[in-house]
Length: 155
View 1 (cartoon, rainbow, N blue to C red):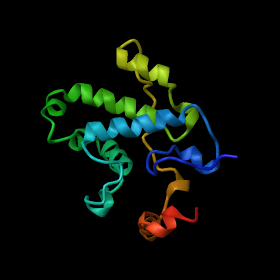
View 2: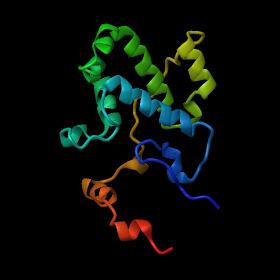
View 3: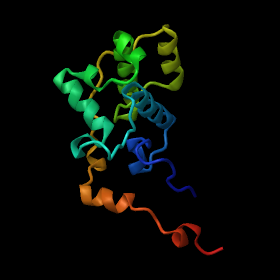
């Protein structure tokens, strides 16, 4: 018997349905890649509330055609190499497909990074899985730190 494990915000949407696939790590890689490109965490409460979740910001910027606006402004390399950054954002988007069947395998991702393959062109930039929708109040409950006595539990 296994239980759900992983870092919130990095777990693929299929975890909610208890579907375990080889593409779950690809999803997590997509999140990490996006964090690197944008220079921020996936969930960042220091941002205004509408920008807490990087995937929502990514989706919104794609819809508005302003993806370059979320690139790490403090990284000169990211700014200078905007064309390559945009290609890496496509790789991240491919890895973050809500439907795990549409995600590439990690070996395919490696081929893209090596320049042997291209990213699929028909990507879905709707990263909002209805099962993941939670109210701010529900997020508050989830994110409250547990007391040390609860964390250590009985031995």
